[in-house]
Amino acid sequence: MTTALLELDRVDACYGAAHVLHRLSLSVLPGERVALIGRNGVGKTTVVNTVLGLAALRGGRVRIGRREPARPRPYMAANEGVAVVPQGRCIVANLTVEENLLLGSAVRRKGPWQLDSVYALFPILRERAHTPGTALSGGQQQMLAIGRALMANPALILLDEPTEGLAPVIVDQLADILNRVADQGTALLLIEQNLSLVMRVARRYYALAKGAVVADGEVAHESLDALQRHVMV
Ligand SMILES: Nc1ncnc2c1ncn2[C@@H]1O[C@H](COP(=O)(O)OP(=O)(O)OP(=O)(O)O)[C@@H](O)[C@H]1O
Ligand SMILES: [Mg+2]
Image (tube, rainbow, N blue to C red):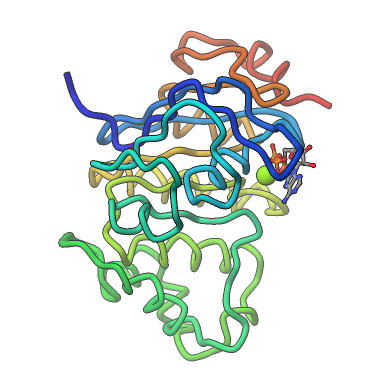
């Protein structure tokens, strides 16, 4: 059996007394394109936070690459080839575009991604290399956040709502980019409420409600309406 790059097995997770994830199980195998969908506040970001150790693991198991830590810590994901594109992008304001990209190479594995290949994927980032990262438009900042994640040559990227606040034309570009990244063999866990992106990029999905998985399967086997029910407010 292929070993998952990331596996949560009946995970319970909390912020202090707030119990957010309930016996949540999911996995991502090498090269897979998996979506995690669900309404606002169901616990999508908490899945990422649990992997990073920013939410407390209270039950179940988390496997990150080759490790199965009782208490995950932020550096473990990076060391195991799991990169994160955080919700809200987290571009560092005082650094240029290029410096933001170089931050991503602090924990670097062997692979195709370095400044030149990231700039080839995102020509606009080369043009704007020496401007402050936060001077970019929202869509360009999202590309910078993805480029920064790629600089580590990760086996898996967790993307937390990359299309939030972006115009439809930028969402189309993002779909192409994510497919190109996945075609190079990088696995994706795409946290999204934008089902147009999910349907164009993901093969498998998990739907969350109230911190638990309520549906999962192949994206191609579901109608848009069936998926829509999991994200409608
Ligand atoms: N640091 C925190 N401390 C306490 N509760 C939190 C914290 N962060 C999130 N929560 C709560 O945990 C629940 C899940 O939040 P989470 O951010 O994981 O949802 P989400 O699915 O990512 O939502 P969105 O789509 O709005 O980003 C919510 O009820 C939220 O209020
Ligand atoms: Mg979130």
